Image (tube, rainbow, N blue to C red; front, side, top):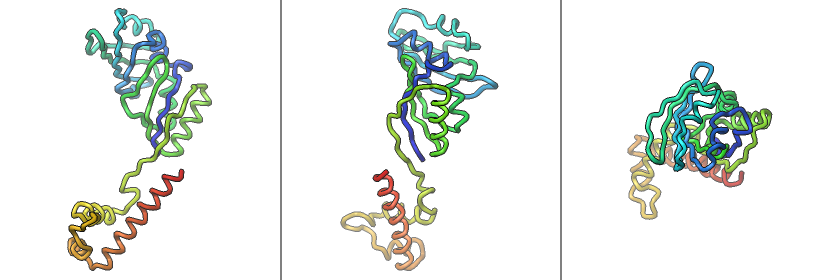
Amino acid sequence: MPHLRLKLDAAAAEDWLATLSTELPDALFKVLTTIPAGEGLLGIVEVQHTGREPLDHHFEDASQVNSYEVIHEDDQIVLLQFTSRMTESYDVLLTSGTVPQYPVILQDGWFSAELLGSQDGLSEYLDELSVVGIPYEIVSVTHTHDPGELLTERQWQVLTEAVERGYYETSRRCTLVELAETFDINKSSMSKLLQRAEMRIVKEFVAEATR
């Protein structure tokens, strides 16, 4: 599954939280969660702010905020829960089916996010950002794989057993025959199972390295 890291200038769109962060450019916002709530959003954000100016009035003055509550506050951190209208940047996420990995960092209008989704979903997300005029920068793109997607259940069972019992160590602690006996199959069948699993892993590794 593709894993995308990017930065986007949400202050260029209708995003009240990003705009608020431009008013406090030295503050670090950590968005801990945001979920759709009716036609709007429910979110929790942590603000690391060493200034003396209280944050409350910034939330009070934001016309898109329906309500907010200070959960915790000390000299450096304010933790708030809020409900607000749907923001343009989050609406793009919902439309594409892309999933953000929390916390999402926000500073001076720019979100730094890690996103998971299908190749088509992420492509749709980036296209939609361009359509609505939200500037973005791609930091990195990697691919992660669920072993269940790459190997069959049987191959995964055999391979993990082989690793755990030391079959792949330089001085093998487990022979092919012993491994076959564990699964009640003959040596030839075990050899073919391992070869097919190893072939899939090697092919995927080479394909990933040459992307």
